[in-house]
Length: 516
Image (tube, rainbow, N blue to C red; front, side):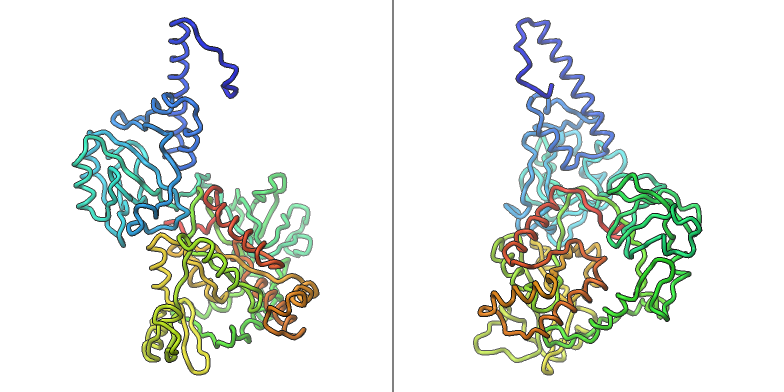
């Protein structure tokens, strides 16, 4: 029935009844598919949206006798901020969905689910197995509105549920729902380059699987303590043995700076030294305290092996983090992004201990506070990053980032690479973009073309920028979601915007530790 123009009109009542029977059979099969998927995610809903017959879409039911999924053509991708700006906490890249329940479900909504008010929205904490039809609500979902009325407290929710014969819920599905994988399979992101031909531990080189930083492996067998059976997810014909985490750790020689048997770390050690000696735009950076980091952990800090991943349905990120060496154009791109879409993107105002200038306004350029306050907040790890310039303290507070997220906006940050370890977690869900330089000669040529409109720099300074950029990539490259070479600011901005927008429609790999 894909070519609808080929279907001829039916002339007899028998033929019409036969068609109705076929439609009913098709709807039952589609219903079974939905139930097998286990939920009505955005992707499933838009699939029903594509059905040309409205009545067919309205006839689809779940196994729950009291629950009818109606009017799938009205399910739409919405901007949660519009019409409910102060109640929605997640980023604008999320999609809300509408679900209608009959009056018979009122008791379950009032008694069999646990919700809590959190920063102006309702979060589903638990759902009884027999409370509602399968997967109507899931733990972690956000209830935005009931019967079209925004709700932010449990009392408001109960009042709206009781007020109507039919209950309509607007729900933002939990972003952290991973795709179902076999319990025996593990998906790993490679954090080092590996070449089995140079691995003395492997007798038969041909059975080893070569990979590079950023490759994703599907590990199907971990029965052997030292060698795992794996294949690359984007190259299914390629499979072989890869060293286990325990094997890599046991053969790592920290003193020489070289991981024997296929894992090279010398570049990272050299690059880390370069970064440690750098100043960020003249600001001396202070390192956050890490009380839980033992001396053993520190000694292996440079040893990166694998990171376990899960694959998620499309969802947005809460923060957009721009990383680059000084002088590459990171702040120009950030400003361009904020001007382009101020409704959905916002940034934070830094704090400083220096005195306010006559032309400055509190909360516009900076928040001006005392030196004592800055030191106290630094001691309590309240800053994403902080530093000192000419005896004055500067810093970006984590609470400021959270405030932007609570407004339903994506928080755009330009920070030093050391801040990645603080913000790369479930709470901030960052999309980390590295703005790289072209090769030195090309970088120099581009600079000379635009010399009149740029800050004066010597050839040696340009070379140092390229070296610093390479050093950042060597040490932190395995943490980047996207790398863009900035040859033209407008083109780089467009590529960044397109990549971030694609998160709304493409499945994504994220760290497994982001999943509860």
